[in-house]
Length: 628
Ligand code: ADP
Ligand code: MG
Image (cartoon, rainbow, N blue to C red; front, top):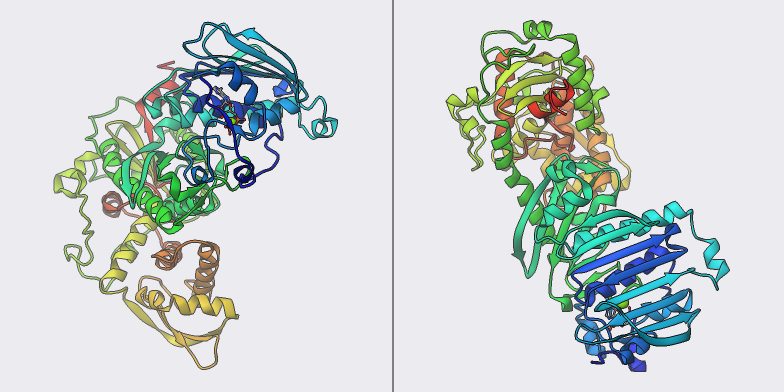
C-alpha cells in the first residue's frame, strides 16, 4: 500500500533545508532513523572502508510497495507528515523527505524493499541521482539500502573526509547512539566484514548500556526512575556522584527517542549535579525525556540534533529536580554497600583493629608496604580525577566540625536533621565499619562487608563542613568573629556586582561585609569563626573574597540563581577552612566517618571529587591472582 506523498511546495519551504549528508555517519544516521520509523525490530549496519566505499542498512520494518520505492527518491516525498500543521508536532525521527534523494544523488545507491505481506518486492538502482534500473527484488520483508562510492561525483566533498578509521568511528558512534536510544531494537554492526557489535533486543535499558559500554560503567550508574514533572517524563540512568568524564561524549540525552544536544538540558544537568560534579567535567547520562511533541521544535537544523523548547524553564526545572533527587536517593543504596557490618578478621595482612583502642599512627606503622602501593594504584584508577597533590600536603583536625562556640552535638540546630536516617545514626552502628588506620596522613582505611573502603579525609571533611555550613545558613547563620582591623576592598564593577548580589549570603556565612562609601568599595569586619584568621598565614579575608568571586564568575554563566550563590560561597569558605587544619586523632576519625555517612551526598566533596572508594574483595582477589 502506498504511503508516501510529495509535500506541497508551501510545506516543503518550511522545512529546515540544508545539507544533510556531510560524511558517512550522516548516511548511517538517516538510514537507521528511517528503519526505526519503519518499525524495525532488527537493524543491521554494515560499513566498508569507513563507510566511504560502502554502507548497507538492512531492516525488517514495514517495507515499501513499488510506487513508494520510486517516490521516496523524490525530494520532499515523505509518509511522515502531510500538512504544515503536522510540522508543529513531530513524532517520528524523519519528516523532511530529503534524506534518500540526497544520499542517492551523491552515491551509487541501491534500494531493495518488500512489504511484509507482499510476495515480491522492488529493487531500484540509482547512480548520482539518476534511476538506472527498477526490477523485482527483495528476498525478505523489510528494506535494504546500499550506498556505495559516497561522493564519487563530488570530489570536493570527498576530499574533506577524514581517515577511514576516523569516519568508521563516527559511524560506529552513530550506531551506538541509536542503539542506546532504542534498546527494544536488535542491532548488528559489521565493519569490513567483521561483526563489531551484536546487540540483542532488550526491554532493559541497563542491559543495552552494559552490552555497549561495559559492566564497569553500568555499575557506576544510578537509575532514574520514571517521573513526570510539569508534563515532562524523565527516566534512564545517570552517573553516581563523582562519576564524570572530561567531555560530553557520554552525556547522552534522548528527547522523544531522538538523540539531542541542547544547552538548556546541558546546563540543567550541571545544575542538578552541582557539587557532585567536578569543575570542567561532564556528567555521564543516558537520559530519556518524553514530552508533548507540540512543545518542542525539531525543525531547527537539517540534522535535527538541535531542538528548541516552547517552555524551556519547565524543561530545566524537571531535569534539575529529577537529577538532584536521583543523586540524593542514591545515598540509601550507597549506605547498603558501604555500611554493611564488616565480617570478622580478613585473614590477610591487613588485620583490622577494633574501631576504638589503637591510634591511627600505630596502625599506620603496621601496614605492609605492598598494601600501600596496591591501594594507591587502585585509588588513583578509581578516582582518576582527584587532585591528590593538593590533598597530600594537607592534614586534618576536627576543629571546624564543631566551632568552639557551637552548641554540643546533641543540639538539634547543629545536628544533621535530614530525614534519611541510616544504621550509622544508631549507637551500635560503629560496628558497621572498622577503621583499620590512616594511610599517608590522608586516606582512612576501613573494612566493610564488601571489602576495603578508602576515605579521603580531606574531601570527606570538606563535604561535611559544606553541608554543615548550608544547614547553619538556613537556621541561625554561621558564628562570626570580628577582625581586629576592619579592611576595605575596592572591586571592579562586575565583581562588585557579584558581591552585592550575594551580600546576604556572605553575611549568613559569617563574612561581615557591607558597601562602604564609594561604589565598588566594601568593608570587611568579620570572618566565620572556624576560619582561623589574623597573622600567621591563615585565612586572608581579601584572598577569601577573591576566591569567592572567581568561583561565582565560573558558575554564574547560564545557570539559575537558585541556591547557586550560597553553594559557591559555602564551597569556597570550607576549602579555606580545611586548609587551616592539622592532625586527626582516632575519636575524630570515627566522628568524621559518622558525620560523613550522615551527609546528603557523602560520596563526593563539594567539588565533585570522590570522598570514598570501595575496593571489593573481588578486586583484591583478582589482584592477588586468587581469581581470574
Ligand atoms: P523522511 O524520513 O524525512 O520521511 P526520507 O527521505 O528519509 O524522508 O525517506 C522518505 C520516505 O521513504 C519515508 O517517509 C518513508 O516512507 C520511506 N522510507 C525510507 N526508508 C524506509 C525504510 N527503511 N523502510 C520503510 N520505508 C522507508
Ligand atoms: Mg528519513
